[in-house]
Image (cartoon, rainbow, N blue to C red; front, top):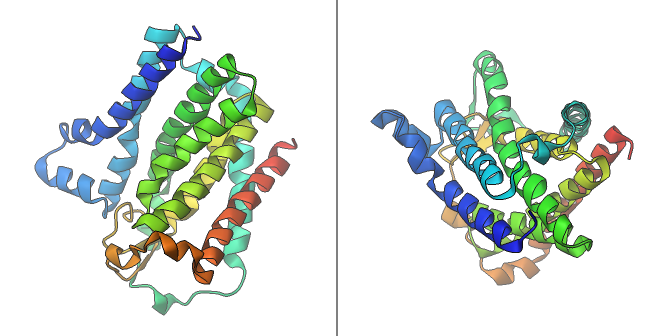
Length: 284
């Protein structure tokens, strides 16, 4: 069922589910746990935030059956190939990111306000990776598994089925920024990450490689470093001292400053490196 109105309904309702997921999730939590969930600064709070993405995933699967008569695995592709590609890309991209992390200049331990207990952090790692898999998996089955596929049924143009989902993916990440300038950098970076995942999906015919790339990126971004008191910092091993997010609320004209241009170029190059590592991992 390829009607565009079906796609628009699914996009609207899934977006609504994303917005409602926190409110739904806290219904099952006691008050103190609900506070930790909204803050996202503890291990429990951050894990709960990531697992709450599952509500949107379940809603998407239900809408898929209702409006398109499709099942969950039609979003993923061949499950054996997808699992193999996920592991290859996650390991490949992860090793490249680790190698970059070990290059100079090296940070100093006294730069951090807190280094969490390594034993506790390691014990939480399986739960953290599973939570991240729920988070990135939900985003990938929607943007690449659903939207990219459905638009490809409506048009053979890459500008439609590859660029539109990636642009939307970038747009929703604008709100990750702490101001207009930071938000634009986030949106451009996420849009390029979306293009990389879209390309990997088209090359492999399944979502495994895209999920693997997304998972490796988020694992390094969220499980290694964080800022004390900032959302989604509860699983980070190294925590920088708290800074007021408003200090990063830069106006749009800041995008033309040399240091912001360098920051943006660094973010763009990081996506290119991860995409090339993923391409090598899948040999395509």
